[in-house]
Image 1 (cartoon, rainbow, N blue to C red):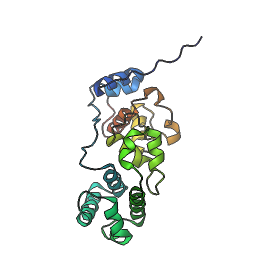
Image 2 (tube, one colour; image 1 turned 90 degrees about the vertical axis):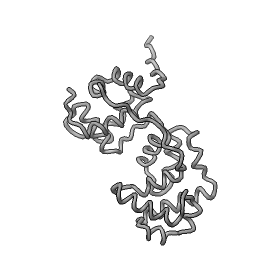
Image 3 (spheres, rainbow, N blue to C red; image 1 turned 180 degrees about the horizontal axis):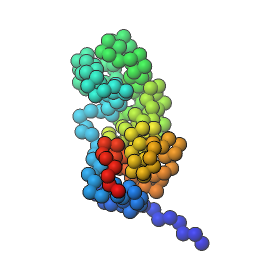
Image 4 (cartoon, rainbow, N blue to C red; image 1 turned 135 degrees about the horizontal axis):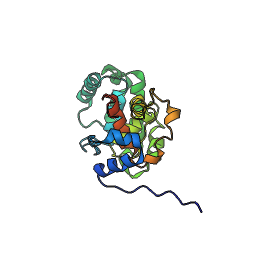
Length: 216
């Protein structure tokens, strides 16, 4: 009889998680030696989930400085906190005036309208990861990557593997010594053995792109 694979341990600290990950993948283990700890903590609750998503949409494909400028202009018009009813009152034209593209204005207004009509964005914490992705990507202009970043850095979800992120794929290639950046298809299942802690792996992939690969 073939033995079932052991379930991964339920670990409480990032230090213990990184130690565990190091035992599951030899090359990752070398990179994690003396590595900083993944900063897994939910963002301060001064922003609602709604605001977090709105600000993420604003920041898509923009520099941090440009995104901050537009965000501050928006808050100057709506006041803080930014609420869906206030955004609907502004309308498309005034959203364009603060510097938003047509596409981003549409996304923000569609999400705002859904929340006003009863979509409970503030309770998505209670849903499993796949359901959160399904619920949020139904909105035009909110893609899987945006939702994955929301889950990692707002909700503190530990098992997100954002294969659409070029930095994650490039970092994985560096850590594994591939000599090239793998495609999305190539990294779909490569970290299954590192579940349910793949957010930690993804963060270290980003770190790998900022460091010289001298850990061999």
